[in-house]
Length: 429
Ligand code: AMP
Figure (cartoon, rainbow, N blue to C red):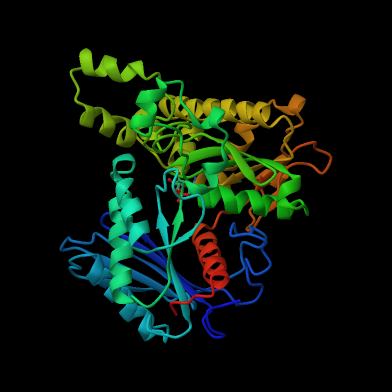
């Protein structure tokens, strides 16, 4: 199954422009996720599976105020301040922290490093072992992901320099959505222009949608191929997907993560003519509008807060601006539930996930309110109960199961990485 009988650990790296998030997982701890999988798409069977040996974050890389926060398995977080010049220094600092816990990156137990890569375009439909050609292709996709892919590449190159002998695997946010039919993936644009500039709907948060749709099937005691699920990933970024028999058939994010739902700071769907209007009448530049729509819109633009906890607190105090922001957020969400119900024809489950989806009972209740005619009902007691782990919040008699399913993108990346490295025999290790 693995590279060697002892190599069962996977280091997951999520490299941003000035940050590096990481987790070290042991894939043979307990119920190994992915071990009985027929394909490289990992299961969402048991979100608690996969032993988490350590996790952490390096922030403000390149600044004088960099910070490393490292949490080993015993939960005793360690922090380190002081400048960390670049991603190379950041990864070396992480390696030093791991070594303190006896988990050094030179350990023969490390099977592979799994990298989150935001944009895989149409080129990457599955997790992929990284070589020169893969690096070049991720680089070629920079024009469609100018913020993310360069940072992801930096993380990959740094890790490859540190452990050139180890398999490094790219797991793409877009890959799960490459099964969308052309009717969902294409915009109604002039075809030649769209092709020339690779303008189409790619979708994001794919590792989360993959994980949660499978975990939802497991919660229902069914195989993914036997269920149709609407997944609502509601975090600071938010996206919905329609998953038929384990395959994504539509998702709300498009060429970039701007399309779709109302998010913490992004507008989501908009009449494209708003942009021309702001250019012509508002005399704003493309960069200014980009910043407006990505950073100063959505919940924060509507009411000055992007944290749903704060918005709910204000709503409860009678704040009208917060109420309107909440209502706009819910209205959009409900429209997508309706749209994906129609796309799927038959819906077995609706799964709420990510920071808002997992924690905000009022959002869940409002999003499915008055949908009883569609078989969608939530039990108020179950919805409001504080609980961890995947759970149903609909009454047992409901036609459509409504569920809260915690996402775990790192476990999904580790599982996909481990499944791939195990399959290919890890000839590099
Ligand atoms: P994520 O991007 O998945 O980490 O989600 C982050 C968002 O989750 C925050 O901006 C909050 O809006 C939301 N969130 C986290 N905890 C709660 C909570 N207890 N109640 C409501 N919203 C929450």
